[in-house]
Amino acid sequence: MKLKTYTDGGARGNPGPAAIGVLICSEDGEILLEHSDTIGEATNNVAEYRALIEGMRQAKELKAEELDCFLDSELVVKQLLGEYKLKNYNLQKLFDEVQKMKRQFQSTSFSHLGREEEYMRRADQLVNYALDEAKKKVRRGWQS
Image (cartoon, rainbow, N blue to C red; front, side):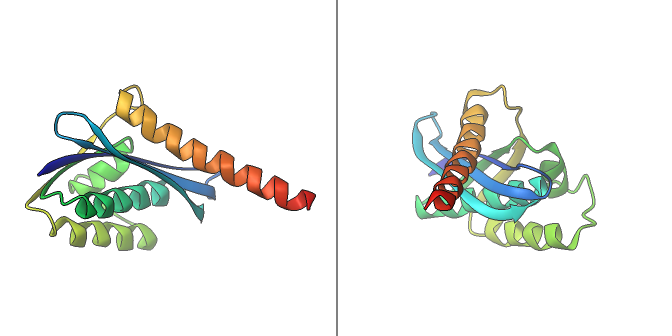
């Protein structure tokens, strides 16, 4: 079975509070899974990689054999395609994890899509939802 992941990661501040958004669709575009979560303090690039890794993990749980991964980070896509070199140790570890996970699928592809695309817009909304909800919890915690 072939699936598509649309992932986004973001940080408010760079680094700052960060979150991931994952949308997984069937080959014909049916949404199978939406996931968002905070990941603590991170940079935007770390969040982008963490979102991709989570998307790949979730796709494997959904029994994907082939995977098309769409990201809004052109930098991460170019790193994964070997067009840009990695200089950051933390990103290198995440890059290596993606390469390891890639072997679990018969085929994988990585493509850049802008936020204007419908599914990428939804992945971005999931990131912001997670960050907004985390902010509300912090505020409520201070009022206790």
